[in-house]
Each structure stands twice: as structure tokens, then as C-alpha cells.
Amino acid sequence: MSSKMLPVSDAATLGRPVARARRLRAVVAAAAVLLLAVAILLATRSPGPGAAAAAAGGPSTEIVLDVSGSVADSSPKVAGAALTRLSHSGRRFGLILFSDTAEETLPPGTPAVELRPFADALARTSTVTSGNGVSYRQQDYFANPWGPSFKGGTLISAGLVAARRAIRRDHVHGSVLLISDLGNPPSDGTAVKRQLIAFERTGIGVKILALPNALRRDVRWFERVEGPTAFDRPLPVARPPSPTRVPAVFPLGLAAAAALLALVLGADQLVTRSLRWGANR
Image (cartoon, rainbow, N blue to C red; front, side, top):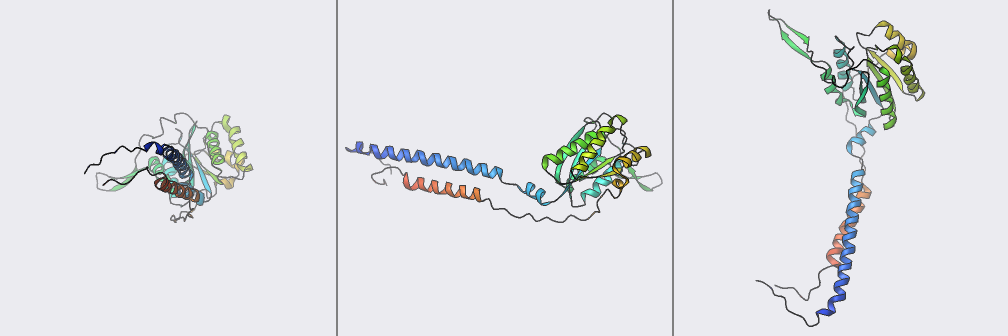
């Protein structure tokens, strides 16, 4: 059944109530938009589970990994095995890849399990069956996935600089693990010393894992600068990762904004209803 509008002789007397209702509706709409914007802003600024987990994970170790062309033979496999062991440590890490330049691939505080793809990319093994039926494991060499980015020589200082910047940027307390063949040019020696001194002054410990193709003279150079204990037990003892409980934080501001928004929308239905003489049926 359709309804028809009837002309009313005193419709002009509704002018002021109509204007008041429009003003109220405008105020309510503006308040609703403002509260919605505040709720969205608070939601974006609320700490996510990743940030909370990183904060609860404690210290972080910044791995400085040499991927230069001088790292050859079995060294990539050893570096991959080291990353595999670290990935099962249940700790938190950052990862810097370097040759003559450096690139941050994992920020400080990243869960250890994220190291596994890099460990797999460094060295893979496959079972090969010879003609006499004997199976043996063989290194599966393939193109370095970071080759296009790291084509130059070795500058260990570049990796150490990137690690120090990442630690300082994220305000992380931890240590540095250098994995390299230590084949650094003499021209970079002063810069390396400067970075190692900076780590010592800020209380950041440095451990060194020399790859198999490292020359004895290069190892001795780092022993003189950093001390022989820097090479002692550079890898943590592997242990199964344990789940970390992150305390839940109730978003009080977001809840308050949502409650006020609900009240405003309710007020819109109660206060700013359309003016009617009666209901049409």
C-alpha cells in the first residue's frame, strides 16, 4: 500500500525545528567521523604481535655474513650449517650480508627460524647414486642468489658498519657474530679496527667464525685486534625453541573511542529522528 503526502497549513511552523534537527545531525556526523578517525589511528599505532614478540625475546645477535667471491669451496656449506644451527637455537637475530657493500636482510630481533631460507640458499646436499649402486652425498653447487648485488671484493668494515647502524636504530642490546673467510684488504684494516672499538665502547660483544678457507695470517690479525677469545665458541648451544608468552595489552584507548562512537551513533537515532506527524501504514 502506497502513502501520499498531504499539504499542511501550518507546515511553516516546522522551520525552526527542522533547522535545529539539521544542526544536531551535522554535529553528530562530525563527532562520528572524528571518533572513527581516532579509532583507526589508535588501531594502527597499537603494537602488533610481531613487535611484542621481538620485545619479549630479549637480546639479539647481529650476524654479519660474508658472501663475497673469495668465499669458495666448502665455505658456503659451513656457513649454511652454522645458520642452520642458529635457526634451531630459539634466539633472535639480525642478518647482514656483505661483500664490498652490505645489505640488511633481517632486522634485529627476528626469530631464529627465519634464518632457515638463507641456510638452504648457501648450501644444499643431494643423494647421488654412482654406477656401482653406492649412494653418497654431494654438494649441490648453484648460482649465488646474491650474485647480482654483491659482485665486488671483500670489505668487512661495510658489514660491521651496517650491523652497528641496525643495532643503534632498533635500540637492541646484544652481540655481533662475524662469519667470514677474513680475507680483507689491508686498506680496510683501519676501518675494521674503528668499528670493533665502537662495539667495545657500547658493550656489544663480537664473536668470529672463521670459514675453512680463511688464511692463518688473516686469523692472526683478528686475534691481535679482538683477542683470541673472540673465536671461542662463537655459536650458541642449539636447543629446541620454546614458545614465548607475550603479555596481552588491552587497547584501552581504542576501546574508549569505539564506545564513544557507539554512543554517538545511538544518540543520532534518538535525538536526530526525522520530524513526522505520524507513521504511515
